[in-house]
Length: 166
Length: 148
Image 1 (spheres, one colour):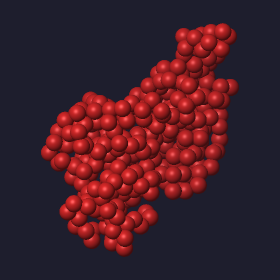
Image 2 (cartoon, helix red, strand yellow):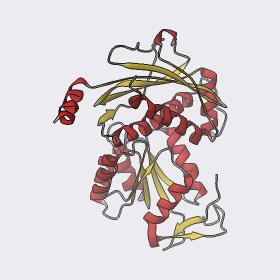
Image 3 (tube, one colour):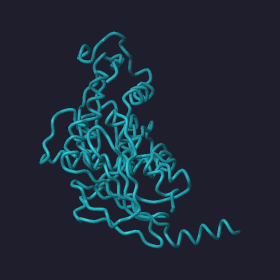
């Protein structure tokens, strides 16, 4: 398991949620089996390109999404309010941005794309070169799921191996 | 939120005026709450770099709080253009992507400081005080709104 790629996302998710929601969070289930993953409700997808490629989906059921938006906005937000999507997108930006900062400090270079609404029912399956992991962060507002699928860019990986070997 | 001594402009003792630039409405609201807690006033808002340039010309703020990753024009380019036209502009970059290259690029273009998201009010307050320097004064014991 390429935990060095995934750990920064887990740490960032934990840190950002506890900071923004002003609460303690708990890392719940971590699962590598994509077969069990189904989209929960409001899901934001962020694509990453560069030395590491892949995508992260931040996924919350509609009730939790509204509760998180309410907590962050400081006033009641209905499940159907567009502010829910806006808040979840910004939350995913914060988590990915912080994770990417850690990975960048480790020497990886890449670009992150703005969040998109993820409408597919399932995530990406793990494969030989792509680690796909679903994890759950429990907060007082409800559970926040992160579906992370990452792989090293093949060309960059070869270049890095050549540098290490020289 | 923590209580802060109100920060006002030294020259006329009026509230510091801010331009808040971020494509996220939530992020703008969040920063606005902090600005109000510091006794400041939001003079303008923009959701992208291009709008930020025109808003700067209109609002003539004391401080610009600028996100980096935005549609149409990113924050670093917008900061560079604003500073090129207004050499006295004080731009603080505010982004979740806080790696060295981004920070150095922003500072090289003339930004005064960098604050990583999620923004902590006490960090932003100190950065604003530092960037304003002698052009701002903290009024101890004054609540936000007293100076307006």
